[in-house]
Length: 104
Image (cartoon, rainbow, N blue to C red; front, top):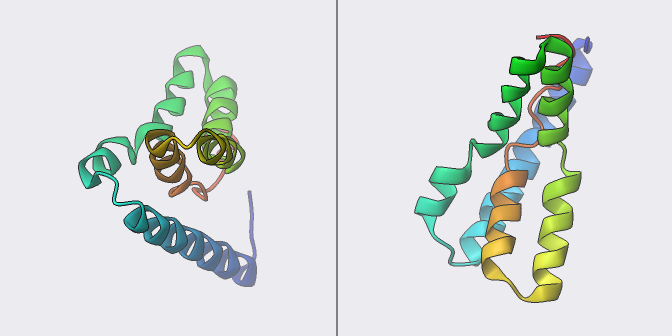
């Protein structure tokens, strides 16, 4: 993906704001910071799609780094009153704006 200078700045600002917001929300949940540290990079496991090839890796990585899944998990967690699921949703969503991969 090619972004111009202004687009790149907005992209980074958006990522920083979402990251900061999710960290603040996580802090308010009184959840385990050890859990946060252990699961923070878990979405990067989606890059294991490299085993099936570059195209599959790019697709699985992008799916693992969208905000849709962690947001859905957080909504379900709130409806189910599950603090663990909410924690996982927040952690998963924190690094969501990693640049999409189009061809490694």
